[in-house]
Length: 90
Image 1 (cartoon, helix red, strand yellow):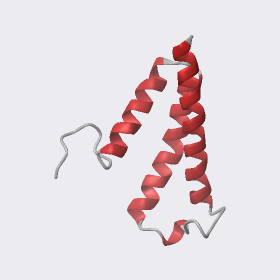
Image 2: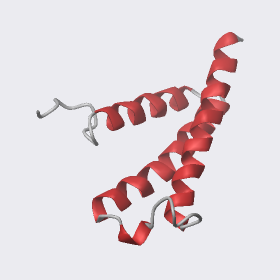
Image 3: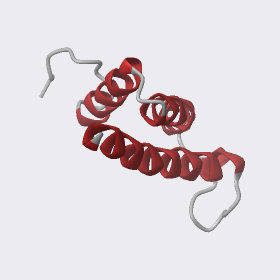
């Protein structure tokens, strides 16, 4: 039961992160960032994480096994700058 509450707490955090990415992509607050003036790579990253953060949040809220996997995959991609678990090139 404790694991389910932890997963749902993380789901709320990931929902807020996904919605924040959508506010940037849709241009809700242009003082924060103007999406069209950002580099193409940054636009792609914002779009990717706007979709996958919400997908992982739904999986975490439902306590589905793929929700934890999606969360771990997202964390590894952010930590390696988009490298999906491969060796870090430094």
